[in-house]
Image (cartoon, rainbow, N blue to C red; front, side, top):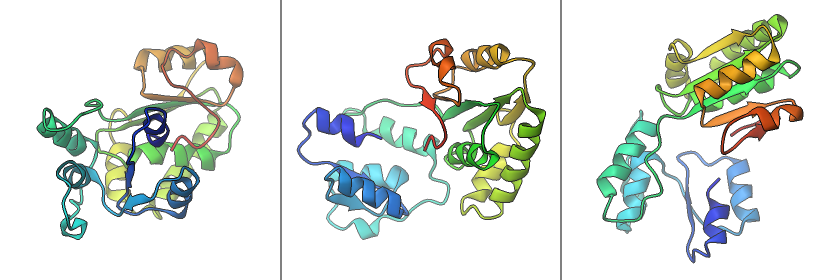
Amino acid sequence: MTVIPAQVARVKTICVTSPRPSAEILMTAKLLGVENVFRMGGAQAIAALAFRTADHSQSRPHRRAGKHLVAAAKKLLGGEVGIDLWPDPPRSSIIADEADPRHLAADMLAQAEHDIEASAILLTTSRKLLTKSRAKLTSNLQMLPTAPVACEIRSATTARLFLCPSVDAAVEASNRLAPEQPAIYDESLLPKIHSGQRFLGRAQS
């Protein structure tokens, strides 16, 4: 997600960190020409890169190293190294009437597993789609390694599936929520979404 901006800025050395790099992450890194991939994540990865530790194996991942700890680590390093921003917990909304419930559930859980303060919201006019998506969320949680974190957001007040009276009402609700990552399945809605970044179709993350 941030490799390409670094390449555009002509950064000489680019590093990617992930506590459990998947085949997709490794292949993407290869396609982008990134040779430095480290198996670590969260606040400890930020510290390791900032202070250039000689032995990355000494980094011990914190079980709950989510977005809030990453933001705290960035604040502590302010003035030591360049910091991009201190983001709030990730927020996402999905507007869909015709979509595969499996894809919707995967998109929501992709945000839910980041942080217990994250927000994942589905806005739809289809009661059938809402019911099926809720069922897929429940079944997917049984297979998700980060289920303890995702379960907490699933029960939080900011994680919901809403049945909207119309598509326009869903768009208005999304704009009022001002999510970091709004996703839509209908291309005609793109001009109506007030956000710097908009995702079209499935697979936000």
